[in-house]
Each structure stands twice: as structure tokens, then as C-alpha cells.
Amino acid sequence: MERTVSLPDEISRALAELKEGLTALYGERLKGIYLFGSYSRGDFTEGSDVDIAVLLSGEVRVGEEIDRIGVIASSISLRYGITLSVLPIPETWWVSRKSPWLENLKQEGIPLPITVPSADSQWELAVLAEPKTIPAEGWL
Image 1: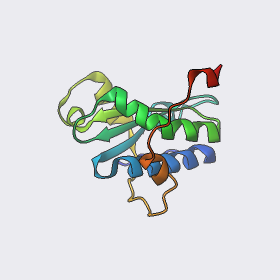
Image 2: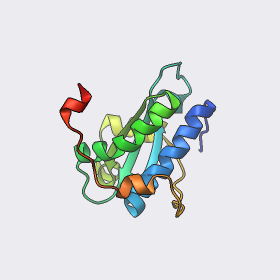
Image 3: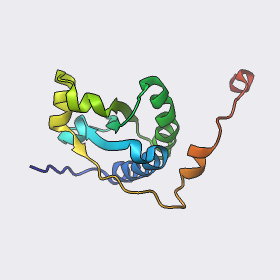
Image 4: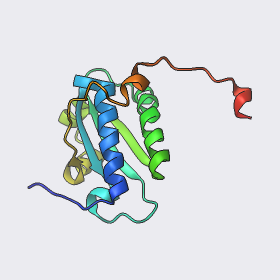
């Protein structure tokens, strides 16, 4: 049974941008994007974070993937004044692990359709660009 929820416009726009960014970043490694938590249940309040699970094929080093995804998610979060909490999950866990947390995610998660990025994707340059080093004194 397919579930739908009504989302505020800024959340819908943010999710569309996130999908585009993740698709540009991961390409065929991206196996699924799921909205879960209060926004999937429809019991969100003002200030609720937007929980997203990202299923990835191949080797997944969660800490490294959080850093990579964070570049995209933080930009979108700042633009829309929301908090995107994005968690990368190895596809193998989704298929084979039997944890209560994953079972709950599978039950309440709403899959977001994945589309092929356009050639002029706004995230293409950000994804391909080399990281810049910023001196610590610049932040003080």
C-alpha cells in the first residue's frame, strides 16, 4: 500500500533539490532515498528535522558519506531554514539486517523517486570540485 503525506512547500522544494544533489553525487550507487520520522508520519511540528535515509550500493564508510552528503544537505538546509538529517545506509544492511530501527524505517519510510540528473545540474560542479582548505584563523 502506497502512502502519501502533505508536506509544506519549502520541505517539498528542499527534498527535490536534495534528490537532485544525491543523484548527481552518487549516480548508479544511489539505490533509494527514504523520508522517515515525523514528516513521513505526518506528525511534524515547526522546527522538526527532516529525516532522510540514503541507500547506497558498494562499500559505504558512513562517516565519509555523511561528510560528502553534508555539503549538499547543509546548503539546502540554510537556503530553506530547515534541518535535513541525512543518514547513509549500505544497501546490504537494508536487505539483510534485522534490526528494530531498520524494520521501523522500512515500515514508515516513504520512498522518494530517483531521477537521472540533467547535464546542467546545479550540483555537478560542487560534486566534482576538489575540497578547499580554509585556514582555521579565518573562522575565528
